[in-house]
Image (tube, rainbow, N blue to C red; front, side, top):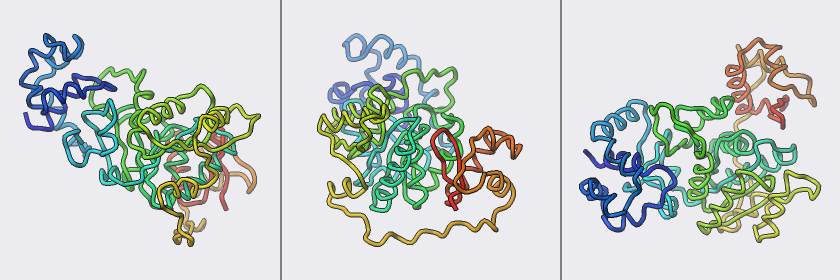
Length: 366
């Protein structure tokens, strides 16, 4: 097996979210682990389940997995490579293998900032996230999030609106779309950033029961600092915070109303010592950066007269300025299937012609 295939073999055997530093420190190379595979269990270096998985995954299996991902233009990034993200390498349970679609160079940016928040934000949460993420993108940060519905998506969209890089960490393999409505966004990100996962494609009957919480450690591990825009007391968002605290990352939180359940989590973080954020500058200054005094010239929004096909159909179906419509109403008005409708709305958002509101409602931006 070549080096990449050895790492694929090891990752398959260990499973996700495992602290394998002691194994690495003892052997010093993945080749040495492979050569001693028959004795790892006897020496109590791995579990019975891990031993079974390591011994049942052959060299041919590893080769086929490598070839499958290469044929689908997916970069296999192993822990042993220089391109592996330096900050992620240092956590307790780094993925031995990352599957990446897009530009891996953005993973080496010196200022990767995680942005996380509720899947069902308030109008305040959406506007605060957009404003802060716009400034972070302009200031040179690479925004890292989980491509979930809600505020994760707003962070990615902010970067794309400014033609800046963003990193999406999935809780599934790269060929699954969750939520399905984010498929257009997931397909856009590799053009100006990266989508990554620790889960291989082509594995049947995979259940991603715990993968979204496990994914959160990667978001925290990649990020130099983590900004929480809006979160309840009990949420997956706060699991990302706990990982970030464990890894010694900076924690930032957006203050919210004392009467809002959606701000209970962020307000608690502020009580616990998180740094308050009301604008991007509050984060950028922590790292000796500043938002450009003069914002870079943005591409002018596409003229409405230039719209054709689905873009024109959906734009015309939106109500008058100041009002919004949900996807059910727009689907009925346009006759477009859900996936095609969401793809069109995403394209209109990227052109600056449409804004998404809480509750998956959309309005004209002009």
